[in-house]
Length: 275
Image (cartoon, rainbow, N blue to C red; front, side):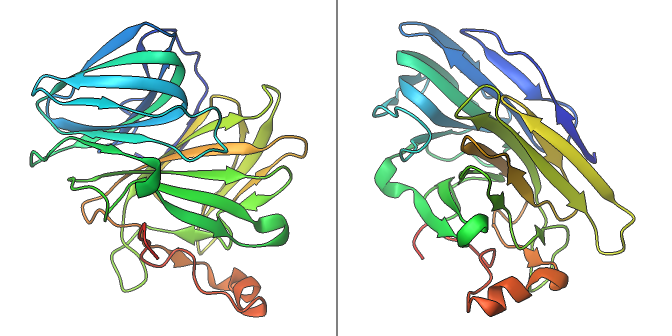
């Protein structure tokens, strides 16, 4: 438990786990799948989420479901997601060269498998000026039935800040619910980079992580704003796991002035796909 960064190479045509054992109730990886190749995944006691970062794939499950995504050319287009319940085996086959983000969390109950289409993805623009970004709610509270797992995306323009004002989701209260997060990063250019700052209310925690293409960061506490270098846009896949299966976070009081000055509401209040 805690926080850290994973910088690990991936292999073609297999599931590469990136965060696996560092956190209690969540793991993540990627599938870099060449056209015509397949990967088989057994979910066991976990539910799995698959987010298409680019490409196109079809999926067949051991219970007889068949799903086909549309084509996603790059991360600026709306995503497709796939939620597979526990006690299943799913085979993913690339119809185009594909990069697929994977999240998994323990599952007490078994639900129906579901393909999330572009039309079912919620979100929109957040912030303004050099702290604007766009968010996609993919495997979410109100468009899927699940146990603990949720997945979304943030696309941060060149030179901008994200996750601002800083927020946390450490405790159960009127303002927040606790959940752990993993972030997976891509950039428009392989040389792209960013910085993530993690801190707490009494300054006992004060960590900074450089972020490069293909990196993962995991955390179970603290505020965590992020900035992207100039010259290329940044992509963040967010994998979340919490017993309340909600996205609801508390803002750091020192930075709420930026919302007040711009007459904006808390963007991390209980978030739904249809706002």
